[in-house]
Image 1: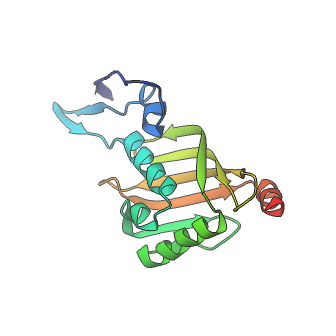
Image 2: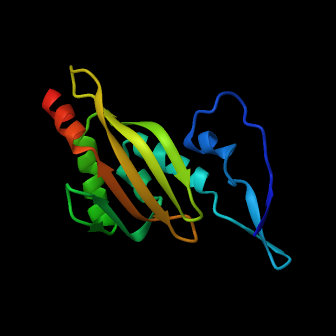
Length: 166
């Protein structure tokens, strides 16, 4: 398989998820197939917009990036949740459970129609210190770039310690 890549310099420091991975990925590549060019999904850009939606603390912004029958599962905490109405409720509860929700990225691994994010969920209860715990997300997207599935795995020893300190 051959790729033609367009590499563009990034202004300033690398700050977004897309910029973090962009210089090392095929994010601006086009796959050459039998003489024609087809644009691949820009998974780094989709992951960056998805992280921005989460850090906006706005369930509607997150849902705008999900397919209508998308699924979410926080493994070990809940069963699989499907559809915008159920996802809206679940995502709103995340922001209630973890006030001032934040993301610290450790690694972002990109595939053709998915990404894996190794991250720390941070939060700060009112009048208390900021705390957090490690998590791993596996996120799949459809051909149009909408999230169809998000699986989140937590380090439950860290979750318990962070919540106990709250």
